[in-house]
Length: 318
Image (cartoon, rainbow, N blue to C red; front, side, top):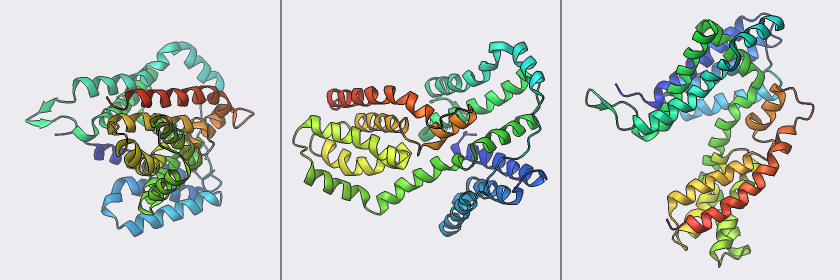
């Protein structure tokens, strides 16, 4: 049987549904009904999204936004072990605690490189068009199993920890999903064509360097505004990448797309809109400055963006 990405959608949906049930049963939760409804609706998107009419999914997203906007998504009570007990466990396990986390990239890389063409019973073992994401999902499941074995914990405890982490991040967990959809909406609304019109009429793209710089910097700026590189990609690629870099300067689309997304990630490092990357970590680390993560990343993001401009300029024909 081929392992497909749909299987991991069901896994995530089941986990969110269980988190919703646990939230509903938490009588100490300040707004357990609203929070449970939020996570239940999000679970529904993963479990049955493709089988539901688009209007139903859209209504669910609107309800989720209202629940989050009116403060309904709050953390509950998790019953953590005493600090002394947790410190003793960490002291006993030491650096072995990092092994489950390292297992995720190890399995992803190994599966992508060694098993991408593997077959079982005449069928591909891994879904070819999503092999990297499938391997990432396999790595995550194996990491959970390894963490349970290492810490002598049960799968139920792993689920409780998942709920605690999701509660800590709150509504920001949904933000990447929402922003990716926003990018598609922008494409359907013709924002990419509008960007192309503005760029070609107001900016001089008569040199290859200028076109490359506008594309890479534009990817970063749109990501800063929208908070997600996947939302910025269809706008800038449809407005500048395809018509100018590929159409006029005959750039390699694969190279353009790869370095363009890398440029977008530079914008991710510099924006509070990327809440799950920059605001949530500050909250989890209990930093005094909620923008401390962004301030620490800017000295890396700007030189990296400049390097991407150079890389695309010299590699766009390969």
